[in-house]
Length: 454
Image (tube, one colour):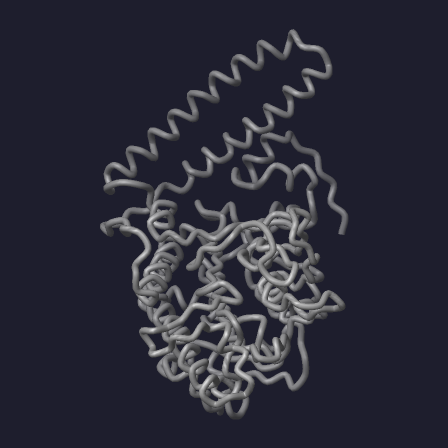
């Protein structure tokens, strides 16, 4: 289908949503055209409720024997790892057979944790480098953010729970950028996760007491607007006195000013949500308390429609965190190279159970929160949980441990185990999820099609 475009640039930007990035619209990519033509169908359920998408990653693979369900379809038995989710069995589906082939070495040697993290949401094989010339793919959450980010005040949330180096070699010659970032806005632009819950709170609600937050918010808007008014008047007068090259440079500057205008308009369309909660003091000492605080903030961001897209690695890939509170003093990564020793495998199972408890906590929060039509936030969400390594001892990137929770606004068939009986690119799942957000692409990453029965 060919579409002819004739528009006044600034008027068009206002028309399709003030938060769309200028470069995307100037290039007018197929995705941007889809936004302009089909914006009314994006990221909502058939009942008009917000449709959300989040990705929770766990590191280092799992105890496959305890994870794997018995049987297929609706008549199946949960594996031992899933005991915390027993009460939510009708709210999720488990998949057996997804793979990330681009997390394999493909001649690049070691570095499976970096590749697993880089490929998990992109389906891409990262360029092996420890320098600044890193290159990956665009992640599925950011592909969605390009299309629906203008629907909410926060385009997407990137949460984290462990700090790490942002530069240098983190895994066998792979840049730390691969191992520490799930979200990639472009092949060369990773989006760093925010690990401080107070900073996340202020991103959602603003800083200070409730009344002060709103005053600060309005004051920032007024200040920026008055500056822009001054800039516009001065540049109009200047433009008449400049030569052609300087006018070109001035035009580029005005483009950046217009971009700031769009951000202000976006803020005006989406006022700060209110809450009686106090901002978190910082990072809690207890790991479970920390994770649940971050999950609470993610749930609130969905409930208030502050964002509809989020990523949250519960720990970074390759994490060697110990769990003395669980009676485990060895590091997780060290244990994942279990050498088939029963003692090591049992400890991995305990860690897997711990992370599954956090997923159960999050699903319970989303189920408790209600949308205006009475449906739950969980019913109107798509939550992927898992990782791009199955057995950590083998660094296996096939037969991945993947859960898809939530009803997707009534479009997902929950309460079952789907066993493909073969290797299927996980990016096929992402294509199918993007479909439900109203974003239809021919291909994503290394996808070969869609998941027909989702």
